[in-house]
Image (cartoon, rainbow, N blue to C red; front, side):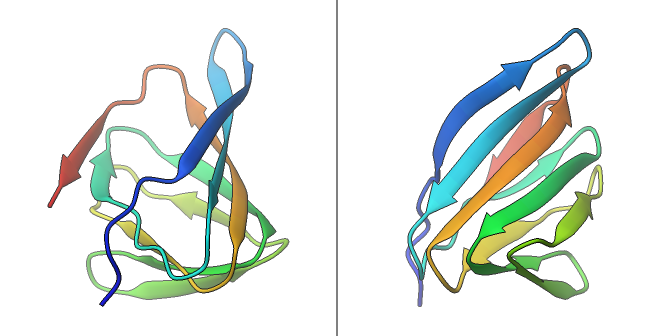
Length: 98
C-alpha cells in the first residue's frame, strides 16, 4: 500500500483569472485525496499516473491532458516519476480527506 505523500508544487505563472502550478512526485506516491470547487486542467509532462475518481480511474501518460471535474473526490497515484502542469482558476478551493 502506498503512503499518502504531498507532491512538490511550484507556481509557474499567475494571471488575473488563472494560475499554473508544476506538480512533481516520485514513482509509487499516492497524493492526498481531495475535492475542488472548480474544474482544472492537468497536463502530464513526464511519467505515468492513475487518477482515481469516485466511480472510475483514468491512466494518464506523458503528453495526456485531463479535465479534473469540480466537486468530485479524486486522488493521483504515480506509477513512474511524475511531473505535470496543473492549470486552475485563481479562486479555486480545495478540501482534503484522509
